[in-house]
Amino acid sequence: MSLLGQRSLMQPAVGRLPCAFKPINMRIPTVVKPTQSRQLTILNAAAVDDLELEEMMASKPTVQVVRKKLRSKRYRDMATKSPGRQAELEPLEAVKRMKSTASTRFTESIEMHARMGLDPKFSDQQLRATVSLPHGTGKELRVAVLTQGDNVKLAQLAGADVFGGDDLIERISGGFLEFDKLIATPDMMPKVAKLGRVLGPRGLMPNPKAGTVTTDISGTVKDFKGGKVEYRLDKTGNLHVLFGRADFKEDAMVDNLKAIQDSIDANKPPGAKGVYWKSMFVCTTMGPSVRVNISALQNIKSKGE
Image (cartoon, rainbow, N blue to C red; front, side, top):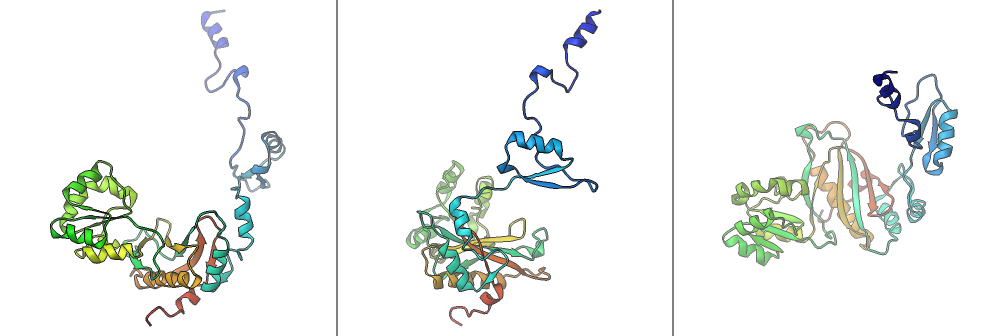
């Protein structure tokens, strides 16, 4: 036998492994698309071990494995108190039900999540604004101010945690990001533009639509310190807004939720078509969601009316 023939016997074919080196359990499936002529079988892979899964795959022509997310026992217990995602509750009843699900050792934040009838791909359907919550968020916000001249003193008197001009820009360029909100005066924006790569991915870039580019330094700092929050539409057409803590009184929760709804309605984009509000849910940080009746929330009179 020639040397070439001996080498062909010693070396496995391209793309194949020798039998002695075949790894075990290579056929663990993820999702197998069904055909029209074959029956679709759904398995809960969390309750099936690898050997059983192999046998089932061999015995059934088409199998789709659904790997369900396992929730904690605490979450499942709290979910039993929730009326379900389709049941809409009055605002006060919804926040009471939400508050009853807060059972962690720390004080959870409360959040509003809304599905809007907007497509963020179109410029006339963008939604980004701010709202001052009547009862605040319950969180201490660290505010930084980029300005110069007399405004530096005004920022300090207003309660800004960090303030400065070129010196603060250098600190931020060096990695200093110990603040939650960055406010800048218009004359500083050409210099702030250089920080786009640092601030942009973290959502800290000053923007007029967010109320963080302003000449009223004192008022803006006090507003954000007092509970002013920013919201914007995400890529999937949803809004997410933190509106308090689980230890707030129910009436205060409803007041904050009403302020958010009023602001979203007031800032309705000109290109919005069809149903504007599709759904609204409230939840604690670690708890299940509760659906809110949006029409009932809109019918509540705002403070001062």
